[in-house]
Length: 410
Image (cartoon, rainbow, N blue to C red; front, side):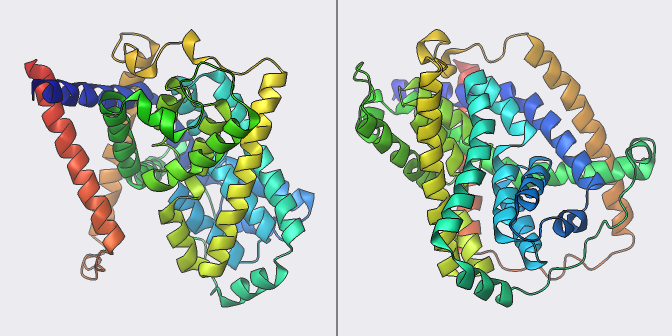
């Protein structure tokens, strides 16, 4: 019992430490993302993403790059762009770029995994788009695309057809209120994924033995160079592990760091990171948007692209002598996560900025409340998935609170 309680306290410490390490990166990334969303409208994106030519695909990827990294927000925006006439490939380029090429994700990867993984993330994001483009050309799903597009109703009009200038945005009270609203919305979309992901990472680090990873990822822990077939199997297992953890792109980075610590190959870790769009909640949402046939086509498309991309990155980095070595940096769970360093100072700075933005968000919310008195009267019933997610979130909070208390009492 004492060993379990000690493990519980250690798991909570690792989870909270992971979040503290990444806090400033989240905040900085979402400030940038919020600014961009206010300055660039969906209507502008849709107009230049029609067709499937290189220019449209490149612009789709660019607009994804400057958009939010939340997988679920990206899915909704992709559907809206596709419904308004954006080409299927530019829409997929937008989806992949908005979850793999965004700035905040690079910050978090740099903190947990190092520069090689950041480079691989951005190069891999481009490769994913190119391979998806290639596989769509090979499979030629024009009839399926036409059928889905015919079923989609026209999306609602853009709420921000006349975006403010950057100067007016940061020099006016209304601009700061809009920024605060966007910033809080970003956190509202990802905090559950982050909470679950970081809690699970602490649990795995404290309680899951190395033997589990050695059996799950073939060749891990052997001390011998991995064969091509072992690396391929690890690249296939990575998405499978992501499918059952169903954690978004920001929440799965600590888990990816733990996998790398346990000896999983570079290709296997990258496949796990790239798998945020092939998890079950994303499949279910795509099925609701497009139907199950298109949802399974998209999953198959993305799965094939991420496996080929991960293998390409692994052997490309190996050829260039850039494959990272986990022994050079030490295990992520053994770092001094609460040290007084640049990260500590940046956390204080961005906690202060977050407080300011939350203040303006509350002011905007109170202002809207005076004009809208009935928006809470038509709440829809929660789905089974939402109830499961709510229970998981409550369990994670309870686990961390008790674990934190045990940590203090030790």
